[in-house]
Image (cartoon, rainbow, N blue to C red; front, side, top):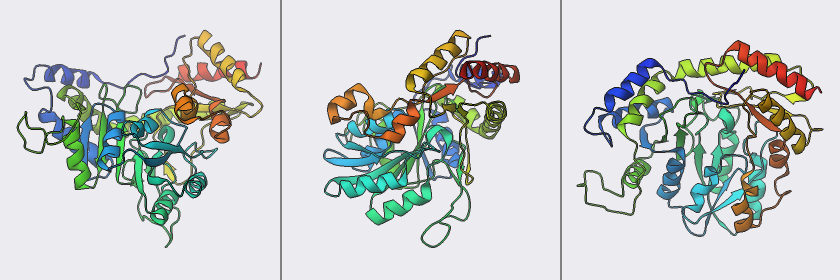
Length: 387
């Protein structure tokens, strides 16, 4: 049996819709773009959506729209895909890393406080928090910190569309009376639609915000700096070719309409894994805080503390030999070669991140993963980890 790591949930209807739009005379910034942006914004409970060609592009546009630039700093997590930090480097700003919570793997509020106090003389403009693996960050605590230090919040929800967060505390009790959707926090948020995500546009992203100025700036920047209503050859600022075509948007429209169904299917797969893996010695199943609704991006187990990185790598190698695709999620950003070179980071800088990253394994995970395949993965893991 051979099981891939991911497999997008695309129906025959969606394939047909993509084929139909290929016959359209206008594939870039066409009629499907606005429709996709509207329903995408609704999925986050936001006023505005700006479709772009990737989540990375979306993060860059938010950084640019907030005026973050040379000499500025942004606090973020070292446990994420690298674009969460690279988006700052595009504007010559500096990422300041704060360590993570050992259970949720999200950025730790106490660590953020330490970074802010340690770097009081630096121009810290924002906190960029990631909803890691589809688990919303601790937004109550993040808002408290942002308000006390008068800095902006940015939500990287590239992995969490469909997730929800319920307020647990605040200066005057619960900050929000109703659950809030991932993507609805901070000045702006971003979703990503790479084929391994919950829903896909083939490739693409969506900035979501309630701020009209951010909306207008992102729209201009993604379209070569053109002004709203400007002619094709009138450019009011330096911009980028971050546009998303109608081919991508037509697929995205139907996928967003199926979001609840897809999230539920992935929940079924995750719970099946949980049931089969929870009693295997040496394995920790993913943790979900009681005040969140998970939108499963990946299913990542963690080996117990007595396993080392080489042990984890050995487990992965054995799984792959049995036809089971797997991967380490994530490799710490601060230990990437060019981050070491640029900023002098070294092993030991963020101990929790490094401890977690040495022991995590992403297992095959997608909406239509069959029970027999999940059982095969669990049985194989039991034999390998117990050997």
